[in-house]
Image (cartoon, rainbow, N blue to C red; front, side, top):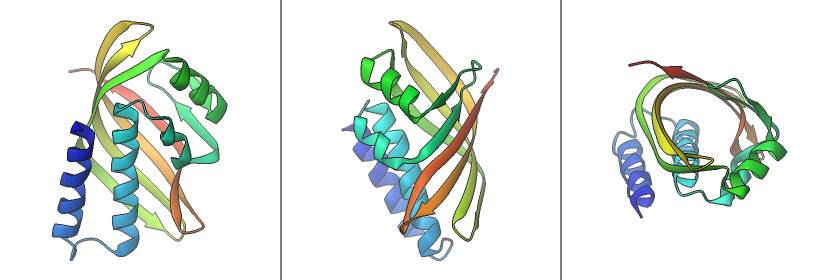
Length: 144
């Protein structure tokens, strides 16, 4: 329920300042918020947001493709409890490609061991049949 609330806040923020964002930008920001919400709720619908050859570079050095992510996500190896964007650093769209630099605070469990970190994330999105899909994501742990 908390994530639905977060999504509603983002949607009202995006649409409340509609003069700032184009229709394409709003659609992308909604997908980004949906990504965080589905991750926080450990919802397998998150896989629908990924481009077929998505690649993840994690802050611990892991590199995963879609199958790797799906396996770890569905097995419960990693369980997210909170994924909150704290800052949107950069946001660029060029034709059917977009990149976003943002800061997120993440809490969860990895093999039942709790973790909490602040990450700098660079995401590349691609528009496929009018829908933004995550293509690549690289995160770096920010030491506080």
